[in-house]
Length: 60
Picture 1 (cartoon, rainbow, N blue to C red):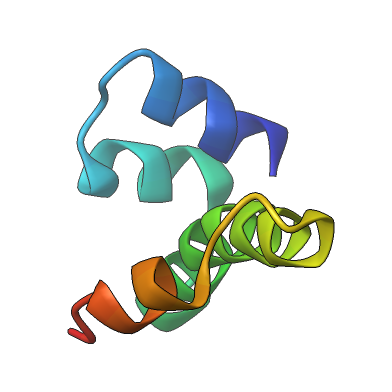
Picture 2 (cartoon, helix red, strand yellow; picture 1 turned 180 degrees about the vertical axis):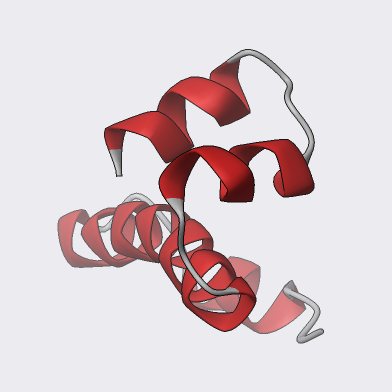
């Protein structure tokens, strides 16, 4: 996970990071998605995000 975060901070492309961490593509994208989700959950629990802001988010 540390290599993933360091790679993202440096602006490296996904393929380059995947070759460093030796994860399968699906596992890589699943792990890449987790930190923002966790941060968002914390913001919801602390009341830093309103219901309206949550409902405005696009679901990709």
